[in-house]
Amino acid sequence: MSVQITSAARRRAPWINAATWVNTDNEEFNASQVLEAANLNWEVQHTPLHTSVITEHGVTNVALENKVATTRVNADGTASVLGITSPTYSIVQNSQIIDIVDSVMFESGAMYESAGELRGGKKIFMAAKLPNTLDLTLKNIDPVNAYLVASNTHDGTDSLRFEIKYLRLVCTNGMTRWTNASAISFKHSARMNVKVEDVRQTLGVILKSNEEFNLLSSSLIEKKVANSDFWSIVKDVFPIDENNMTDRQQENVRERQRTLLNIWNGSTQENIKGTAWGIVNAFTEYEQWARTSLKEDNYAAGERFMLNQGNLLSDRVLQMVR
Image 1 (cartoon, one colour):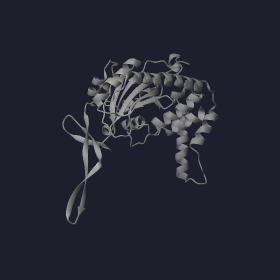
Image 2 (cartoon, one colour):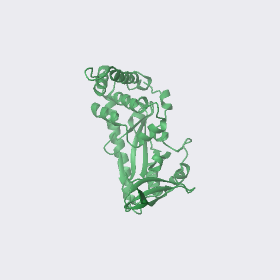
Image 3 (tube, rainbow, N blue to C red):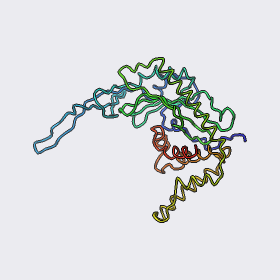
Image 4 (tube, rainbow, N blue to C red):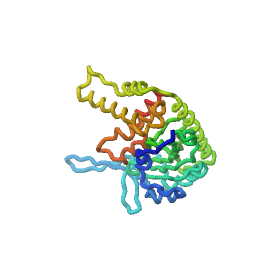
């Protein structure tokens, strides 16, 4: 069956939804140009923390001696607090990671596609599309693109990280943590001196991740399933307990089941329906595109994905069908 890119492909990838800059014309950029275009050329400082105590004698300012704020300072002088860390936490400026990111991107043959900041700059990222080596795409079975995402945090919660993410083009499902070798990280240090061997190690992770993803996706699409298999998993993931659920709760669960069934029978499943790959992607599409709160915009959904939040359902179903 020839693969048709449906209207669902008009959805934007999670890293594009959360981006402040997107390479719409597939032009070649270096990391310095990306930082400037994405408005990520601001700096971070350690600033002291104080609290105030109010008593009948007045107000007393008290310094927090063992904690400092990591504070974002913009070019116009405005500032905002990104996190609270120990004074020994090493700040790695956005501009300091340029050479590292460029080296990895150049060696891997990736092209910068988008960049942005999450949670006001607590985390910044650059996403680049990798050359296509995936069997599902090369054999025109189901188009999937691989992306290399470089990210860094300024609130002490993570390191400089390179992570592989995948995007199914028919439905724009973002897939992450599908393999055991999908990420590599470098702890913050004063100079962030990543050596050539570290870049090669990162490239090794890319190759291994793609190899594992190829094997997994190929095995899932070759694994045939019946409609009853899909429905059994739906009822297992979203069970109805008539004895302990209210009528409203039961109806909410039935609505989720109906939504999943509509996806399973919809246009984004035409070329993969009846396979274990189709089951996983039906649940992934539900989690990323159908379950979104009415109050939540595409940016919020993209940000949640990029922070590795809200993917528990997809992860669970993947383990069930493997």
